[in-house]
Image (cartoon, rainbow, N blue to C red):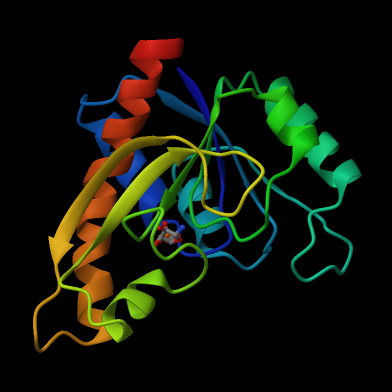
Length: 191
Ligand code: GRF
């Protein structure tokens, strides 16, 4: 299964996918890694593994992902033979041009028990709300923000002395296990 990864930041989830491929628990290959942030560490990680990388140039728009750029992104992914697209810390909203090119083939990972706490820094939102549990969700991407059918979801406890950083770290351990498992599940079901 050929994967394409879109990320804007550190790429620890991409690393977890690479590790799962490396230890034989996930039968896949990362064909292309694209980022809207030329300085993102995810690009360094990919290059270190000899993976093709590229920049998504949104022409100065801070958060917008223009339709024509989405169409071009879809084309690059197709040209690389990508079958499944994994958003891994990608900070722009994917819309029709990309969704139509990969129907039910775009996944996202989000650090909350969706539908609770979509958006940014969701572990902080859960902590501030006094929740007893947080977690992470891997879901299919649709036109909403962190909406779309859930593929896998798991919870972690929120402890009374948790700081936002400690809670985030606990969720990330879970993310790194859940994302490769979700990719495997989707691969078995649809590819
Ligand atoms: C993760 O917490 C993920 O859930 C969210 O963005 C973060 C990306 O982290 N969507 P990384 O770049 O994979 O380290």
